[in-house]
Image 1 (cartoon, rainbow, N blue to C red):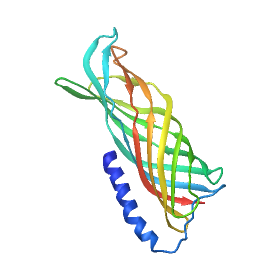
Image 2: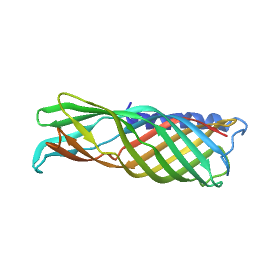
Image 3: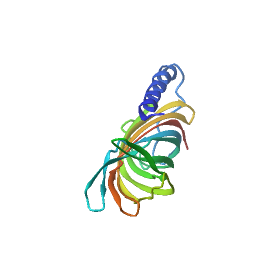
Length: 218
């Protein structure tokens, strides 16, 4: 599932849900100070990186790095400091294939799991009704683990931290339940060392994280 497909699904779900909600009594209210919102989501992580691969001496190799997409379940935990300001942390892990491409070459060199926790501060302008949109900004970490080399290559990826921005909304369903749609942009770069440094690349992953799921207010 691509991020565009997931985002389209989210928009369609919201479009179908909103008319139905308008015809039902209002049982859901926007979260307020002291509330927790826990979200279970399906998230697509996609990177459009096209980083050049160079030799140890810095010469062009004619290759570039391609990082595959991944769709996995994630959890979001949001605490409301005030009626308008909240802090969210997300947990999840994704698996990505790294390929070397260029000319007649298109070969898998590595597969890795990534633990990308993200913490953001959100602003929510609305405190009434069934629609609670938000924007946010914060930091993320990229922790690579469980790496599996492919086709005779040895790849090492550096962990690190980056920045993140987000936009999304909770759309009230009934009781404490809501539909959650969320889009994050993460800025993160990692240094890749291939075959003990014989080849290297400075990879700007900068993924989009597009999610849809169900949330519960506590």
